[in-house]
Image 1 (tube, helix red, strand yellow):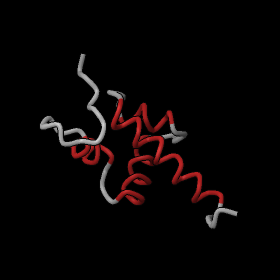
Image 2: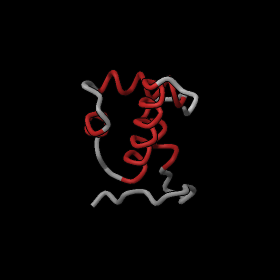
Image 3: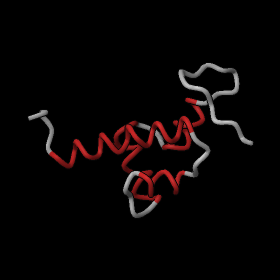
Image 4: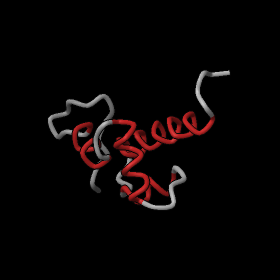
Length: 78
């Protein structure tokens, strides 16, 4: 119906949720992986890199720069 196999849709949805968590929270990569349904941090990192093109930690650093050049506010380290 949406043009994607069910598992591909699920992976895309998980990565959209993960991207929001990475951008807007201070959660660890392991916590984000668990929150979006991955049993291991390593499996999440591989899937994220395959879909997004870069590791989740790198993506987070690029999206949350101290110069304020992001679309969403960076979570505070409080």
